Length: 298
Image (cartoon, rainbow, N blue to C red; front, side, top):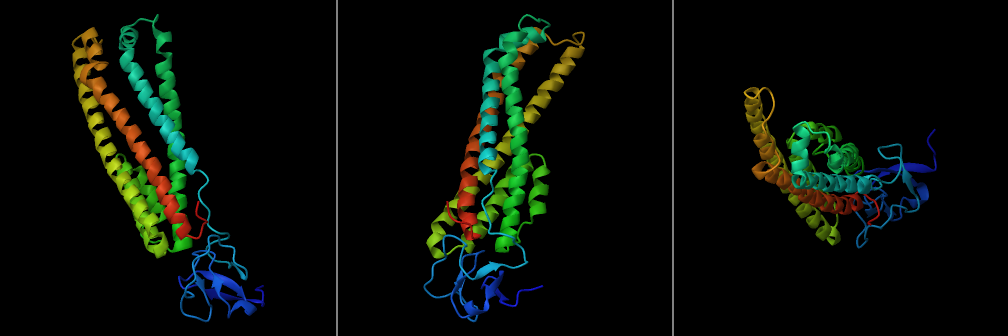
């Protein structure tokens, strides 16, 4: 049963709140967007700055979209560091493969004496792969979370949480889509904040735009490497069929040296650079978006 001591009011942005009767003629603060207003007035109170925390007296959340004030995602730091660790381990494993190519060639030629020497390469690849998989799962949760928060706390409608998640499953395009979705959120946050916070919003838009460019570069780079490796593998298979099904030492040497390894190392280094850009972009986006949704600035 509704409490007769409270009535439903709406802030100028349409957020539904509960206010005590004695506060209806006073200046109140919306705990969602931070705007100060008088319930019987048509707009924000003049000269009032949004509070840094959504804890104003006399207001509570109604049975609407939010059960509590919006908070920053708690998984962001773990997600970013796992992506960074994954890229570092993958690059390290690729460089080790180049430095230990003679060992790898001997192993593929049938030697078992050199296997122990290749353990660091396998360990780097395994650790990097595990970090990458966990980071991908956390990223899916993070993307859904920030779009849900923007939708519920700020009325963001340009990209739904479901669409934001769904398009990340498209190979190659997922790199580009992440940058597009982040830039849309940054522009939304830029338009939702007051003039005093405009610099933060513009900075977030610039950061997420760089993330988009990095995603395009990474997507094109990885696709090119995949096509190049595919052509090389087809050529190796054809040559092996004419050599009793086994690659020749010359073919193995070409696989671990020359242009093949240079391209692979370059792709791994590019991934690390793009992860660093993504790292900075995520931090800029959260620093702009969440204060606009009513969370305290960090």
